[in-house]
Length: 169
Image (cartoon, rainbow, N blue to C red; front, top):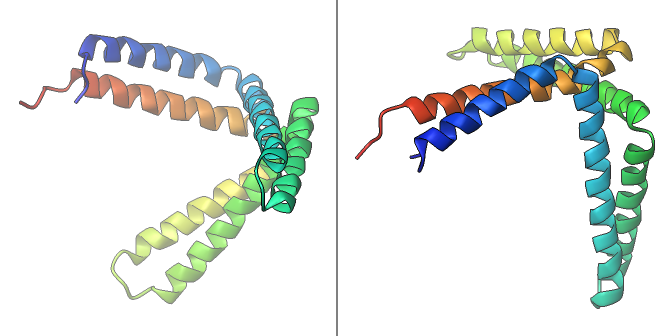
């Protein structure tokens, strides 16, 4: 599965170290993610604008989307902390709405197998959404960076366990 188990193991340990280090600096990681996303959106906007002048047809769509990408990207780059706050609020609201939808589905399917898991999923989403929205904008300091760091840690553990697993012939 993995070509070089030693290299995969070293990369896994490096990812784990970086994940745990970034867990100590969630605001830095969240702001950096917003900032990099802003630059990527600016590049996509420039590509769309280039497309307006280089390809026939659909020019209005490319022009509008290029301008939109540039404006949003510039906002993320020039104001990363307010952007991080807005993104955090949007995620909190999305968790609340997703929890409500899951709760409605759980109620509608209460006689189906696994109904308890549907309720559990709904309650967890509602609790997380409430935590994020209730503590907003303070939750902006930790949410995005913590989620990225935790993902890095779990990814590192997965890669490490895969590198240590016996090979199939």
